[in-house]
Length: 199
Image 1 (tube, one colour):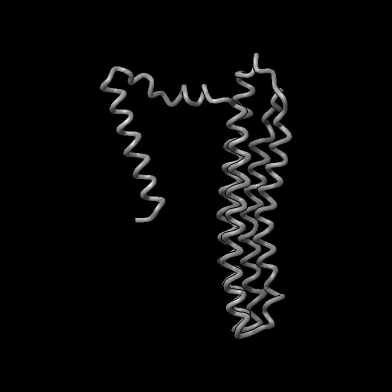
Image 2 (tube, rainbow, N blue to C red):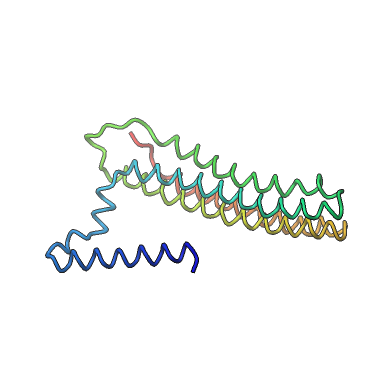
């Protein structure tokens, strides 16, 4: 069993145990997800979204570079000519991280000093949740895009090592895979665009 599935099962079982304990000890109303959402600061939600965006984007870029780089080095043993030409795949993987950083910079412009007295308003909740879900969306899109570009870049390197005429054909597929990260960037801009600044 993988680490992810083990941690998922552990979290689920622990949540059920805590929920049943609270239910049978006359404090079941305290197990309220809605109050958790409202009691948590909107500022926290916004910062978590920005952090998730950067973290997932960088993990996707690193994963793609790992997948692609190993194939480039392995293929270069047979055909040393592919080393420089296939660096375009590494650049595509780096662009994924840059997309996440762009969104993080745009979102962080909405984070300002605030007055704690009138902070828990509908506008601030909307901004916090918009930045959170926008960051999660962009981060996950870039994570998937980084893996996609890495796998396609790996195939491009190995195909180029075998037959130089295949490089451009596989590169077109890699470009289409790279566009997925751009779609995530656009969706993040749309989600965060309507959110007002914290003030």
